[in-house]
Length: 238
Ligand SMILES: Nc1ncnc2c1ncn2[C@@H]1O[C@H](COP(=O)(O)OP(=O)(O)OP(=O)(O)O)[C@@H](O)[C@H]1O
Ligand SMILES: [Mg+2]
Image (tube, protein in one colour):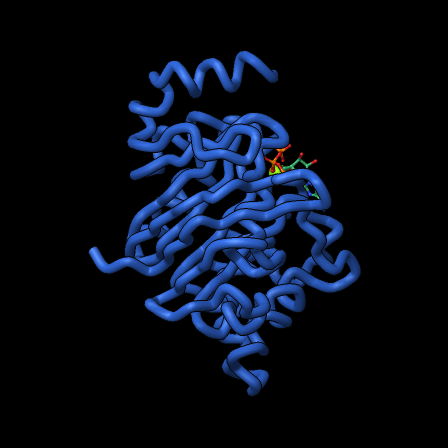
């Protein structure tokens, strides 16, 4: 499997706090990689360092064989990276379609092409029928799908998902798990930060566990949930 993304020895410090300490990651084509760990473990910070929303103090990030360590997110987006945000913030007054048109315009300057793409991704996430509703009318599960559609409108090859399952009720969780699997099956490489273990176990090929900024374990979902260091890290803080 060809490698699409690699992080080597990535560290991020905030003043005296080392939020992420020399963490590595490798993501291959059509792979789902999970990033888990207790609160404050450094997941979001690592995720931001790999996606370009913070620059690491040490280490490097390589996308499709190119060093992107110092590239801002919009440049990485052009190279094939899309992400969702933990707290989704759609433009509430705009319609669902308009929200997706904004990222779609980044690669498709013509309104016709951008709209075709936007409608395609809305259909893919199951919001095709709601294109003309204002974003503020969507419930939580649909807001998450809209957030996902906005990332997909960048036509990424690598997709970063930050806790898109959190707070969903069981049927909505099931639909979201199926949707993520479907995205992987159509060729996306996915990195997901997720607290919902059911989703991690069902979806991930490989899982990295962070605690206090360090990688404390990695392997298949079964391997990491049976790892005594992982159990200890969760029981020790939560
Ligand atoms: N912008 C910042 N400035 C200072 N410290 C920060 C900043 N962002 C994160 N931190 C600190 O870095 C550490 C890691 O935080 P981070 O948000 O990455 O953890 P997390 O694993 O995503 O946690 P959670 O599960 O609660 O979302 C924490 O000690 C946090 O207080
Ligand atoms: Mg976080």
